[in-house]
Length: 232
Ligand SMILES: [Zn+2]
Image (cartoon, rainbow, N blue to C red; front, side, top):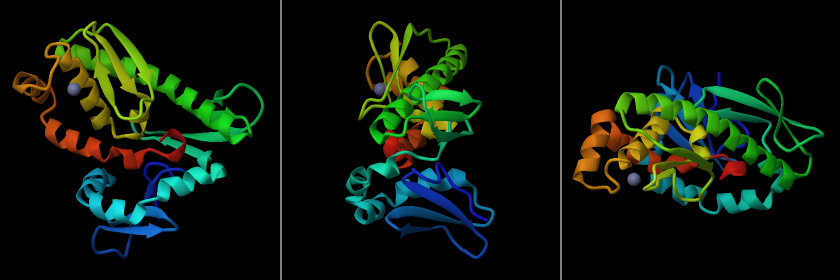
């Protein structure tokens, strides 16, 4: 039995559940990272495992991204798993607009790799927008913090930001992460509406709504390993 997290074909790592394994281990198979979990161990431990072994991972996978960028074909996945939504989507090659949604959980992209990737990224931003709107709605209700507008993009370095006018910007790549991490980022940005800094008051407020804020922030540092090539 093997189970894959977050994306069997394009993710930077996969998770295999092994009946035989006695302990959690990391392996590099064909240039890709594999996390092996013994029976009964939940996939929710994966971010923590990646965080703990960051140095080892970077040593063994250095240069890996460049190799993948050179192999254009590997960029377009057959399946996309959006962990935040707990949903997976099939990618089909076909005519029509880039990133067209043909049926429920089927995305159609053009054959040409560069266009397909652009289409997938546009599609991701559209899916992200509606998901973030509902997350912002529920987090605003919980925290009582009112936001102004939402911007969704795929900036290279930031998961989110908050402007002095109350515009919350969120990174569509968050969809590849666990729901708890998305919620953490949304609450983090909402807290900036009250404290536009990372001072003590800000962290106290954040922690009051997200008691695991310190752990979540640490997991976010390594979350880039969960982003598939086409979205990275
Ligand atoms: Zn911040």
